[in-house]
Image (cartoon, rainbow, N blue to C red; front, side, top):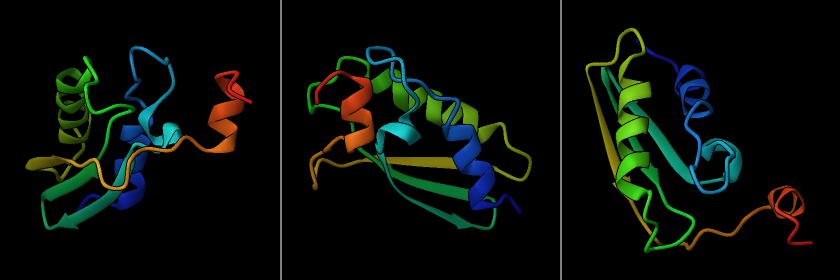
Length: 96
């Protein structure tokens, strides 16, 4: 069975194409649950109208789906709570 740590490492390889940082570091992943060979991920985007949204979902499904022991990946996109970048992300983006 795949571990949560393995899923996180796979998510760290998924980059937001507009910000060029990985979605785990950005804090776009809200939850990960593993039930046997099924992985469910709840995530958000940097904005509700994110043009890269479909590409991000496909990339998450592809990268996590390639892990040994994963048969399916379900990605649920939510906007509550809205994404708030951490101070570290803000600093990297020149927001503070």
